[in-house]
Length: 217
Length: 264
Image (tube, rainbow over all chains, first blue to last red; front, side, top):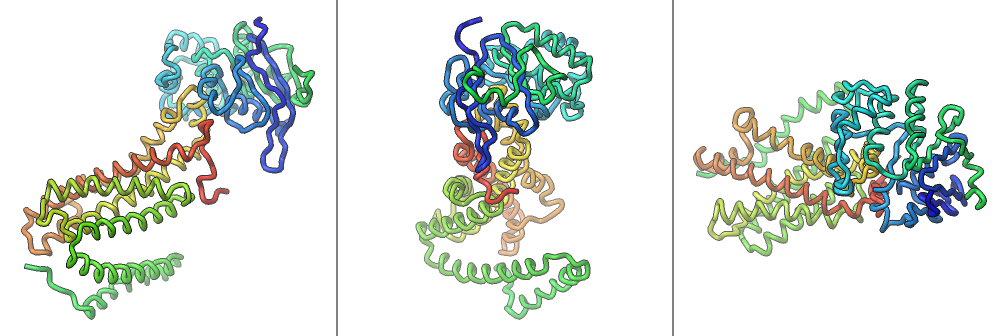
């Protein structure tokens, strides 16, 4: 592991109007580290992930790979982060098109779309290959979550954010996904789950309340 | 030959045509009777005023005055678009005015200076009605296109955010919504062109025939105006989206919800 942090969240607060969702959060992750955040619904777990990808306003400091996240760096830093939503919407068209689409973006020109890797991930995550030619909107919740995870993995980003990304999976699929992610030794993964008995990627499980002090680093 | 004039008494008799629609609205309890009456009154007053004003405009026939009148029409249309799209006037009036102006002026100038070439070249009798026809269609297209663009991004926020999370820049993430907006805005004109002359006899062609020209001349005018309208609507919607784009998103690429006048 490198000494620098892949993710460093320092004194981060999120306030919507007069409501403080959370304040003074601290969290640091080394490259390859896997951490699961727990906490009750509404405690701000998902919002913290949204802050890290630049989808929610925050005060404090977030560093990704030692670079501060701000309006100037967000577009560049998003190339280092992959994000899977609990209820992902991959856009219109067939699954294969949805998986290919991000490779038309300039930011991903250095990464090639690898159909063999797609086939292998489909097999690994217990998805039938025929699903690739189905319309995205016809997929079940569990299928959507796995396809969204595959889309994120294909981009080969060093930091993966998972927002209850396995909540709709059956036990077998969940096991397969968990094992695969655990094998990715270089991939830094921050996942949130309201039920940590259900889906964890390592022994590092923190309640979001525990991050509200600097020792949480 | 000129069109046969209609006396005010004869025109008043025309309002008798409203009896059936009013009866249908009342009988079925459709709650738009008040709005309908208001619209008819507005139409009548506005057209009486315009008819009166155009007489002077045609008599003076000054290009600067014509341009000033087109600017007034654009500003009125602009306010109507902002209201129709539920957007905040402060942010959208200026860029939409500019989008409308180029959407009208480009095909208009091409129409009068290359296709018709009247003498004088910027004759009010040609410039004002043609500008009005193009502007009317641009207004409709802008309302449909701009509303479709911003509301689609708002409603399909997760798909939009998925694109951003996958590395899309702003112009890449909005591209599917831009495509839909252009399709929605241009589809009515495309459909109208496809059925023109078969399903309906269009307004300009009818006007030229009533004005005493032969149908061969009338269809040439109609074809030219449809091309000008299609070009104008495509220009104005594209310009409207791109001119408002960077004012409507935060530096993080998120749609600024403050652009909408009121939201639940």
